Each structure stands twice: as structure tokens, then as C-alpha cells.
Image 1 (cartoon, chains in turn green, cyan):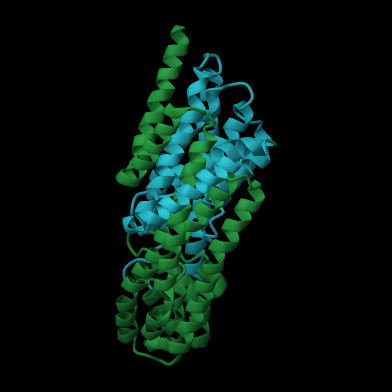
Image 2 (image 1 turned 135 degrees about the vertical axis):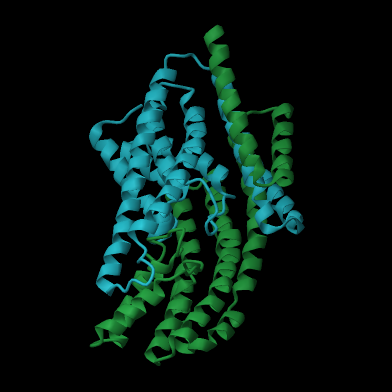
Length: 235
Length: 223
């Protein structure tokens, strides 16, 4: 189940989201629990292929808990209600920790190292090790917690250090954002006060505009590209 | 420039694998633009070109959040295409770096659109019908078919991007470009995009951002 969890989003779709993926992860457990009763097995597979969503790294929490409930012979209605109750929190907890703080902080570390002069291999290794340390721990911890606690897995989720980790990653990320942004200005290799002032303005625009600055940058670069081609053609 | 057919196929393979890593399988984040473009640079024999374009794309993509069913650009195939085409053109064409970055940002949107198409297609090929009981084997085949389709999609997006950008760079190569704008403009765009990631961590952490900026100034001064 752990290895299959890496492919839980493999059939992401707009009707059941990762429902088919969750049934794919659960298939070995369902085969074991319903061995010798093909009809019950097919019914269980169909039930678990219904609508489900979770952060992919925390989907193992649900998979472990559901496998335990199936092994204990829990009624399908109870398992269904349990899945519905769990999916919202597994999504929001994972999104907040991984996508919102951990991944950007690790990526900023990689960019800052590279712009600071580290070789590409070192910067990439630092990113992959730091990022996947949490990633792999979440998958393994989630499966163990689900299998161990079953219906009571919410307590394990409350006691997990996700919020502290997110807070720490947020602080590290904010520091690294300032560091990497200034190093990026330096990468421009243009001495002089006007360029330095433009660099400060770029940082201010980034802080004030947030992710919208990406659209502004894209339009600006495209405009510069066209202007450069037109001016060069006319000169 | 458009790479030779064996390199084109290798880059397509790389784009397909990294597209899988983006969502469908693994999510080890080998699909980050800096890694994807660096690997593409290695495949084409110009790792430096891949790294230069990779770090710019990484900065510009950093604050994009892949949450749930939200629409977002797909970075990896676009980064492989941009790095592959740029690596062939880097020496001869000054306009190539900026054109490759702009193209990659736009091509990421195209990749994102194909992801939406895949997710709609998966409804037909990977979801059991209402009330339909399926064996685990049947369900596994449906799931693996969707995975295979995502790989093919990633490879096609990568190869198409390489062909389009490669042809574009060959055309632009004939035009003398105002080269001196390129590097500062890209650096400032990257700096702004990196600074924008503070939004993810919360503006209350602005003092930490300033501390990082001060550390950055110290590093630049030491260099």
C-alpha cells in the first residue's frame, strides 16, 4: 500500500477526484480481507473508487484507517461517513504544510544556494533531501497512524507536529525569500545606482503584489522582447 | 534550435517522466523547473544553459500552488522544452534566453490546459460507471492506463514545445537583438517573483525577509 500510495493521483479526474487512486492503493488490503468472496471484493472496490480527495502525502492516513476498518468488518455506511469526515482535513492540513510553506522554503533554499555560488548538484541535492525528508515521513507516518488508530486517527492528526513544522518552514522561507531575491538582483551583473534602485523596486513590487507579480513580469518580458526585436530590426 | 531526433526523443522521454512526477506518480519534485531544465541541459550536452534558464523559471514558478482542482501552469515539460531549445541556441543568439523564458511561461499554460483535458478524459477511462462493480484487476488496469496517458501527454507537450521554440529561435537568430537588456530584465523579474513568495509565508514575517535581504547584500559584497 505504501508503494502504491505514490501513484494515488495517477487517475485524477473531475468526477471522483482521486477516488480511483484510493481504490488502487487499497486493492491489496481488499484482496486480503475479502479473499474467497469475489462479489464482496468487487463491491468493496467499487465503494472505495467513489469520490475522495486528500493531500497526496496524507492520503496514506485514510488508506491505513480504511484498511483497518475493512479488516474489522465495519459496515460500509460507517466507512463511507468516516471517509467523508476525513477528506477535508487531510486536504487542508497537507496543502497548508507542504504546498504553502515546506515546498517553497526548500525551493528557495535551492535557488539561494545556486545564486550564492554553490554547484547545481549541491543545490538540487539540498532541495531533494530536505523536501523529501518530510514527504516520505508523512507517507510512512500516515499509513502507520491509520493502521494503528483506525477510527481514532483524528487524534493522531491533532497531535502531529504539522503546525509547528509549517510555522518553522514559514520563518525559514521568509528569510530565504529575502536572501534569494537580493542574490537574483546581483545575478543581473549591472553596476550603478539606477540598477540598484530598480532592484529595490522589484523587491518592493514582489512583496506588495504577491503572486500577481509573475503576470506583470511575464507581460513585461514579452514587451521587452518585442521592443528589442523591433528596435534591432530598425537600427 | 531544434535538437537532433535522438536528443528530441530523449528530451520527450524526460518530459514525460517529469510530467508524471508533477502529479500522477511520486511527486518527489524532480519536476521543479531548476531540476527539469538542468537535466535537459545535461541531455543536450550544455548543462550550464539548462541551469541558467532553470533558475529563472524556478524563480518565476516558485509561488504557484498546485492545490486541488485549481488551474495552474505545468512547469516541467515547459522547462525541458525551453532548456532543450535554448541549449542549442545559447552561443549564437542573444535573444534566445529571454525568448525561451517568455515561451516557457506561456507553454506552461498550454501544459496546464492539457492537464485539464487529461482530467476530463480520465472520467471516461478511469472511473467505474455508476453502480458498476469492478474487480481489483480491472480497476488497476484503468488506473495504469490513466498513468500511461499522462506520460504520453507530457512527452508530446515537451516535444511540441521543443519544435515550436526551436523553430522560433532559428527565426529570431537572424535578427540582431538589443542584447544588453536581457540579463538585467530577467534578473529583476526573477527577484520580484522570489520576493513575492513572502505572501505564502505571511507579511508578518517581513522582518525575517529584510534579515534575509541583508544577508544577501553581505554575500554579494563578499563575492
